Each structure stands twice: as C-alpha cells, then as structure tokens.
Image 1 (spheres, rainbow, N blue to C red):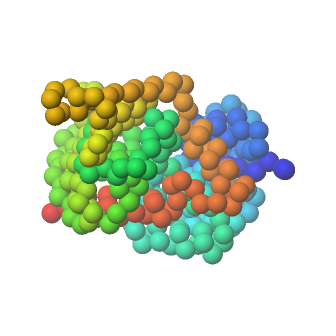
Image 2: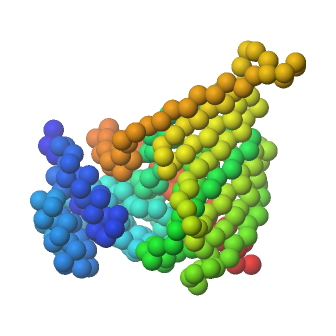
Length: 311
C-alpha cells in the first residue's frame, strides 16, 4: 500500500509537532509544510525532510490528508478548500468559529466521502482511553483545567481555548442532550474571559461542573466522575487513572469498604496516537473517534457558554 501524501498547514507551536509525527509514520509521506512565515516553514521542513511553502493552495489536489493548525478564524476556509479538493482533514479544535461553518464542513466531508476529524487531543490521553464506563454512566462530573498565562492562543476566550477539551469529553461520556447551562467568568489579563465556570445539566439528570483558567499559578487537568457505586478520577496532566468502588467487606457496620486502584500510564504520546488514528480511519474508511459532529457538538455547547458569559 502506497504511503499517504500528507501536509501540515500552519507550523507554529503545535503545527511543528504535527509535522514531526507525520514524518515518523512509515505509511505517510510528508510532502509539504505551510506557514505564512517562510522561515518557520523552512525550519520545520528541514527537520521533517519536507517542502516548505507559504501558500497552502499550492497543495490543493496534491495531498491525500492534511492537518490544519492555523488560527481558528481560518479553520473553515482552509478545511473547506482541502475537503473540496479531495483531501481528508484533521482540523485543530475548535472545529470552526461558528456552528454554521462546522455544519458546512460536515456536509462537504459527507458529499466528498472524506474523513473530517477534530483535534481534541485529550481524547487520546492514555488515562482517558483506559476508562471504561460501560456499566455506569456518571451522575456528577467535576473538571478543572488550569494553566498559567501564555501569550499564544488568545484569539479566543478560555472557553474555546481550554474548557472545550473537557466539554467534548463530558458530552461524549454522558451522551445525552443538554438541558440547561449556567456560566460565570471574568477577564483578568486579556480583553476576553480568562477564567470561567459552567454548570451543565443534562436531560437524563446528570450534571457537570466545569472550570477553566488560563491565569492560574499552577497547571492542573483533572476530571472526577461520580457514579452510584464508584468514583473515578482522571489526571490528564500526569496520565493517572484512579478508581474507587464499593468492596465486598464493610468499612463500618452497614457501610461498605472502598476499594481503590490506581493506574499510571508513562511515556504516552497523545498527538502521535491522534494522527495514527486519523490515518487508520482514512485507510479503513471509518468514522474517527472525534468526528466533525463531535467537534460541532462541543463547539455548540462552548458557544452557548460564551454567550452566557457575555450576557
């Protein structure tokens, strides 16, 4: 089977890592890396043995698959052109600026029979992949995604920058229509919201309390899930999955004992697994773990939270 001809559009902080992963996969040929900065494109191309370009349109019709790692405002236009030209697309989160733009990409991908995948990287965190909730669905979820301030990725609020990771995971875990959302947030260092909290109530009775901050003094990426017979914690930062469940014995008379189990996943590479999954979906003609629909669903919820923060 001949290698897939691949390209990366936008090789800034995250895009350069996409290029490295494609270059490392034996069934991919990285034919081009694109950036508006020729110097940046040349630097990445030299390390990945690829061709540096400044105009992505030079690759339309020449590649089988692309990663789109440009500013969010450009996601729709760039992804639309590549899908229409017959390329499979992995677009970084959020999928687009608006739900209407996401709907158009989903429609084009379906018409062209192309894979449209959204780069919600935490879905490929080893600790989350090991989570099995087939027997119990969470009744209450609490997540905290905290980070110090960084000058990049500030073209969107903290909701679309950080919180959307947890929104996507929670929507997938609960798998039920949202009933009500309450949200509060404040700007601290930028002109947009830098710290926010949202309470998402689902029609099946489940509730999620989601906090995201990009002005914290520490890094924390944790999610806690409570079920009738178990409590599960996922530490995304350290790739640790902790399970607490009722045991057969008693801790006190009439009170069941708590049995705990901790799994640590060392050396995982979520981005490599994400891109490998993208390539596998192309090869096998199957829907990706984070489809265009999943990206659209997360965007719609994040957009509603953002609206509430601005009311």
